[in-house]
Length: 295
Image (cartoon, rainbow, N blue to C red):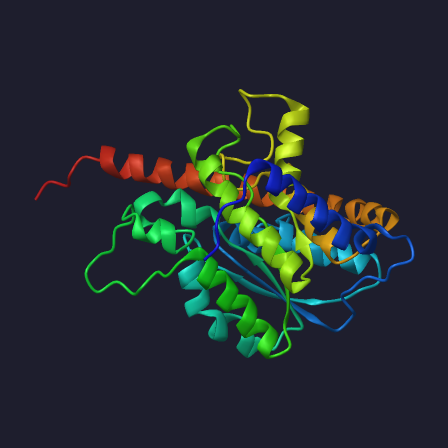
């Protein structure tokens, strides 16, 4: 059974992770881990779904960033809004493994916590506490520890290389109960990465560092609503994933330089969507205001 770590143990684990993977990730002589012609599956929830549907979402930025460095890959988008670890495990074969990717990034944890009593307990101890509800006929949710471990094991069993992403934030106030509850979920991911020698993008640490550095408590600096990414949040996620794929600082700069056209596309798409919504609202209002025809 996974047991949440103490603050001191968590710090030691983060240090161990940095030692284990930092030299590989930031070495100037290291090669990019992903090769041209390979497929990367992006398994996740609405954050990942938006990372693909948004022209400047983090999935698109990762693909463009690799291309800017001479690595052409095929993305396998596998993000579904609202999904938790048990649901990702249930559709793993259909949405990821059957596509035969070489890599799989796994972004999971926000909904397991954010959904509260309808979420997924971290481990057996949390499950036994009885704070989670189950509807009649609903499939077993399991625990986050078991579900994530099963996803990783199933991927590795068929030669797919997992890349773990720590869950980002639930509201940009880092002191919220949701962020405190999310912490041990991310501690488990860090430990799993070390134990299985998996590449990791520690996005939660990146987000916390950025939020603290900017120190704008009354503003959303990385998300649109406290959870889903805005432009800067997508960039930060993409940088984290590209670092996990062993891009050097110089290669990261090339990647970032390639994103400007995608940001323009995203702005244009957002304006078009807003105009379409306004037009529909006006049409609906006009329809309601139109007097009924006399018989």
